Image (tube, rainbow, N blue to C red; front, side):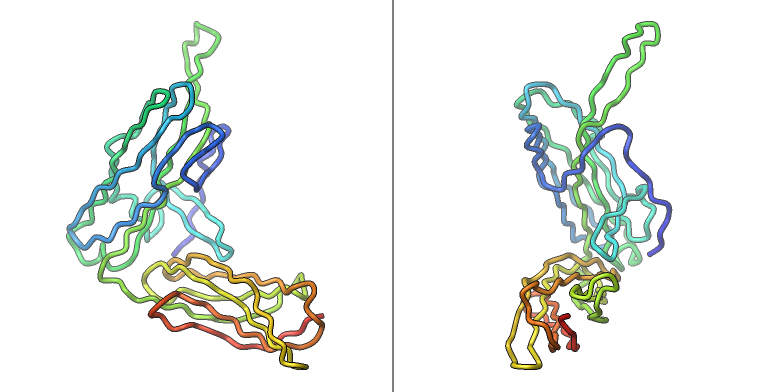
Amino acid sequence: MGHPKIVSFISAVFFVFIAGMANAQNLGVYPTELDFALGKGQNESQVITMTNGSNKKIQFRLYLGDWLRDTLGEHSYFRPDTLSRSCAKYVTLNKNFVEIEPGQTQQVSVKLSMPDNDAAVSEMKWAMLFVETVEEKIANDAAKKQATINNLLRIAIHIYQTPPTLTNRQVKVISLKRAADNSNTYRLFCQNTGNVMLQCKSYLELSSLADGKKTKLDPIEFPLFPEQKRYVIFRLPANLEKGKYSALAVIDLGEDTPLEALESEIEMK
């Protein structure tokens, strides 16, 4: 996957919420994840529900974008249909702008339509739907008669399209190395070598080479797109005795999938 120019969606002041409810303003959007499993030529509509729990009328605008997770799991955003795995061009909304009175709820239909060809469903695709509140402000100078838009809040809805023919769940553990800037921090490097998004759980188990005492670090959970590479950061406990250890780094994909592991020798200094 390439790395085209990142586009900022900032136009005033906003906050991105991955959760479905912005409690400070009593604004709700649900769900925040839309999962599709369409074959070629198929389409499906799903509904998102927006609720205004505030005491004033709220305006929403909706628009699509592309996105990626980097090797540390952070999000990068791009113009819609920029990335090769984008499904943004297959998504249509029945509304792009919504006004909701206090205490009221409205719904927006999100339709995904896949082309009738094998190439369109040969890989997993994804996009992001942004629901952004806007507020109209009329300029004090009546002669200018212009309005400005002040973005107040943005909620991101993940859209995933996983064709039903894709079933390969596989991850590869590449290395376990000490971080250059911290002698007691280790980075597990892995890659999704399957063709669907994985929900991973990784942990590090240490066995003292001096007395055999075992220490298991808390698991770290993270998603992994197809082809994506990822660093998982493990910080050794501060009270861990100094010395050499056999370290078993494990990635667990859940039931019916073999564990992927790598064993290495590390030293607590």
